[in-house]
Length: 405
Image (tube, rainbow, N blue to C red; front, top):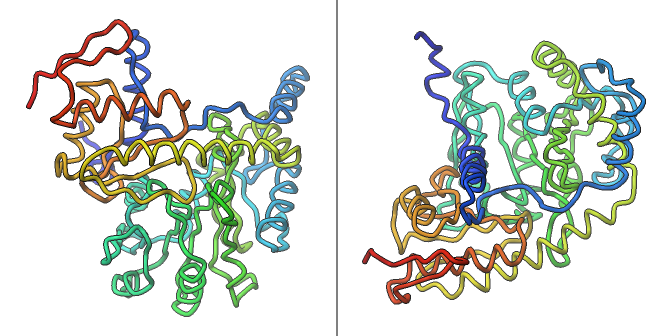
């Protein structure tokens, strides 16, 4: 069968593949613990559910404008004013079927083949593949100091005449690290001076721990006109635990939004009327659910870090936000795919190999689940990896025996 050159070089989403693996094991009745997922287990806001139910009962679920219904765009405008202190108009907003689609349409609107997009490592698994889908070249940047905190110096060295955009995701998936205010200010100034698009994937920006506050990149922008190349990507999936609703958005200059909307109009048309209605209600309703989720994730993260400290030789950077932890397991094996597969085969714990995020030797662990799953999952992992562990482990009535060195 003949397929395109682009398609030949696109890898499947590792995280979605692992979700499928966990679902198959559970369907078979296996006592699997999924520490690889990026999906909050809390319920969506009641306002969203009531709104969706009411619209379903009305039966009036029709086509929508390709850039989103007016009510959702108004809610996004209010959100942008509240969290970014920036007044925008409907023409600056495009709603999509998820933040991923918003980002994809923006990339298609700005990139030509062989142009380059820079992003710090570790990075979300989809960034390189999305860039390649446009025929452009992904350029990951690994901080030279060995941390998860990018430095402008590291990024500057990767900039060429082909560089068209930089993607910044903070708090970061998979590390949970929140980039400093100083770095955000520097990258905004740098991109403005170089005429480079700055795409800010802010999907986790309210899920930060302790006294940290979301960092507003627009605060540092000198160009606040319609010539600005600063783009904000966000959505309801993470902060409102509405992953299956698939509603996200982009906020940018009007011309870029117009072009991205034209692209989206030929891909999927407008997002679902029903799901936009629910997202509008979530954005406009009581916000206590976001704070409740944030506190739960902060507590889960603290417990996970404590449990991981029982391992010998692993390095942990405590997360500042999101629902991920990204410890270095290279002391147990340099090949993160092999370590992850070993843990799944031996103790039925799903993790995501760090190589998928651009950093070998690490594993991404999720703090989305129940405390019981986190503690038991980490205990199973330690039993499997620690050579001083006892010979046997019981998972319910299932008896596991260490038959490896």
